[in-house]
Image (cartoon, rainbow, N blue to C red; front, side, top):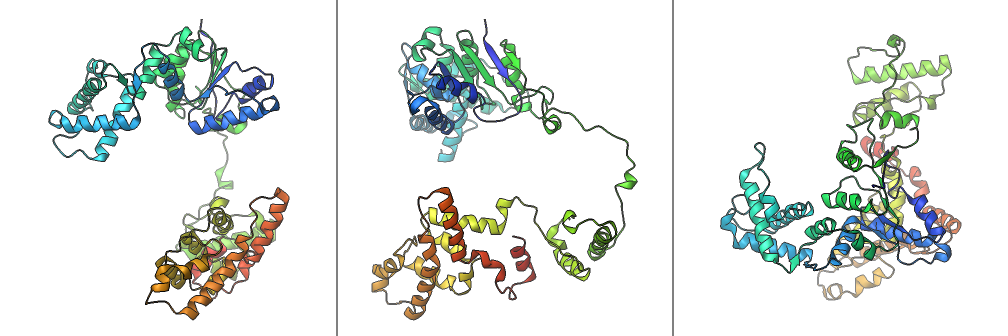
Length: 496
């Protein structure tokens, strides 16, 4: 009898069953297996389970990717072959392509076997092996009548056959080993490798191989298997990529657990509902005017805003205007709105993280965290928000530092510059007075960066960070004299 439950609905978190799992850990029960799609998630969640355990002590929790688990199960099979490394697999594919190139009509076809050809061919063969195809199984497939190259089909068959010959009875590749582990999975093998497991939690997956389906179907006879799938039957178009998995799992006899009543927006975004089509007189909401130039458009909009503000009392900051191409309209907006005595704040509409000013604030922290790479320092100096950029001759100083191989501007970089053999022995030394002045300016600018604390309490770091940004002049960027900038440069600056 199947003990399989399929939880559908939108994506919420990678570990959908985290509350149930962590509750079991807190109760001292380690009778579960968790399957996640990537190794990084596995490492993170293992640490999280240890943190949730009483006293922070927990023996290695059973959290794996499907690939790692199936590989582990294969190795414990009676008579298991030795699994070759991915590098050896690529080497075998290269040897087959080179030694039997005259047999192939699509892949090498007598041409030179390049690294790119080997990599792409190996990736395709791995995918076929993941789905359980060896030379014999692939030869039994019927060639599709349309949209398929017979030469390509034949070459795949030859490659798989030659690969089987190379591997022989002693070796196996990892993708095919995983498939064999699922095919030969038994309750005895499952209990031997995963003793005491009564609950299996699978989440984060959208695509499943036959081996994964086979594992879920078999294990659901011996343990409670819970699978979270990003899918709703109300919107098959949006969730087409997971529809096949939902169909297959349901065919296994899975009990489908639908999410609670979706929220208002969720019904329209994910569940295929449409807003009620109320009959409205659009003449009251939409107005179309024929204007002949950008200046007329902007003037009409400015006049309308002024009327709404003065006649209807609508605050200016509650009104917004969108343009198809902001860059084209900026000069007219500046000119016309100034004539109408209307304040205006231009925005790109980008997320805040893409704001030039916000990016500069973040880059000051990245610079210190990354160890002051030379290129990053001088990229920062090109920003319009850096006051020191007006005084530092960036082009001159950058060329000197590159020439004398100063790669990072960590504390003491000035001494490292003059101590390089190239600098001491060079006949074409730069103007020392000018260089000394530029080095002094850059060193003074970087000094506050060196004072950033590596460790601090949140409150302490917040206070130190504000002082740091003030010390480097970042809070006074708007006071800079920008009369030398072009209109476009000014727009880019003030649209921060």
